[in-house]
Structures are given as structure tokens and as C-alpha cells.
Amino acid sequence: MTKVCWLCEKEVAEGTPLKNDVVIRFIREWKRKFGILKGNDLVVCSEHLGKYTEKRKNFERNLVLYATIAVIVAIGVPILPLLMGASFNFTSICFSLVLAVMIFALSILKYVPALDTGEGGA
Figure 1 (cartoon, helix red, strand yellow):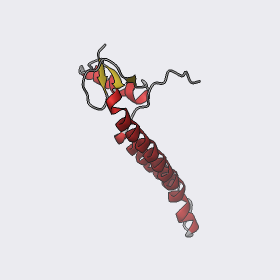
Figure 2: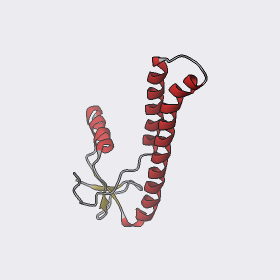
Figure 3: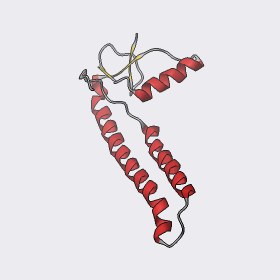
Figure 4: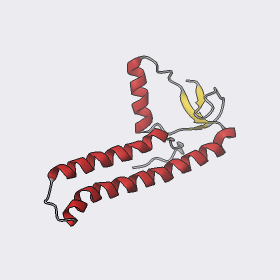
């Protein structure tokens, strides 16, 4: 398979491979279903490694931020009406969970895959 830099989208001879995680597999599966899968190995070339590191760090920071906001919404939406004297409403719990998932899903819009370091995890 051809190695393609994830940032500059050019064919390269050498590069650090990207981890084939859930998001990458999902995208590849959809591309396969639509017949537009190219089957390239995704790597980060050495000249873009610094830029990649900055993008990955920014993604991880935003992931934590979105997760924090999602937890606050999931807890706050059902609790605030109770604190103000309203009766318990199961719909608010369902709504808060759906809203929290949607907020967390926003972090995928700027997804930056991790590098494949070759260390096997459990």
C-alpha cells in the first residue's frame, strides 16, 4: 500500500504510522461502502511531525473541554429545575444525556489520530 502523509496528503517513502483506531476504521468502512476507499497507509512525514504534535495536543485539550462541558450539562439540566422547586421530570434526564452526547461528539469534528508507537495495550 502507498504511504500518504496525513497532513500534506502527499505520497511519502518514510513516516511515522498513525494508529488504526475506531474512528479511522469507521471512516474506512464508510468509504468502502461508497466505493471511494483508496487503501493508503496513513503516516506523518518527518517534516510535518512538529505541526502534527501541535494539532494532536490541541485536539486532546479540546476533547477534555468538550467532555467537561458534556458532564456539566448532563448533571446540570436535570438538577437545576429540582433546585428551583420543580417536580422530577424523566424527560429532562433523557434530554440532558442526548445533549451531552451531542456536545461530546463535536470533538470528533477536529479529530487527530494518535501515532502508532508499536506498544500493545490491553
